[in-house]
Image (cartoon, rainbow, N blue to C red; front, side, top):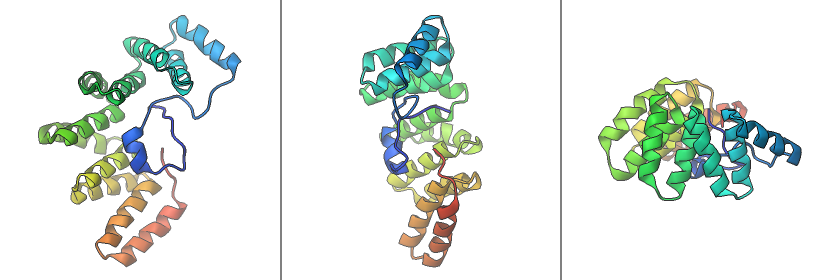
Length: 206
């Protein structure tokens, strides 16, 4: 699964749109950063991705782009998603799509989610249907919950509920909370409260 820069207090709705890729929520010590640099320069693709994450946190977008690019070229699928996200945030949707298509083809659910969101934005039903089944079939809760949020935000509550239910099967408390909100808005308050009680003790899967 890709690593992300996010504060755990942030709601998943926000994370869906700004799920910026980085390796950790705080900068590593200088010694560790130096070790990552050495390992990356020696060709370690995992170190390349972690170095890119650290540089991103420092505000060095150019350095992050360089090392995620090298990691992706070395076969690191996680780096591929992250590289695509950088291009997407920079407004280059086409380049992001090309990279995500390759990463999704290698089984990365976050890349699949990026492609679905792009397809929803442009009203491409075929593009949506291409990747939704694969996202729902895999076993990482966060991309599934994020998929539900994307459907909810475009007004497709039926498909949002389908995704939230699947994420609930994997134990995600966020999915429970979001489905409870829909139930409450539909007047199903008792079921919503029961679901909120479950969510209060469930794991929030990020």
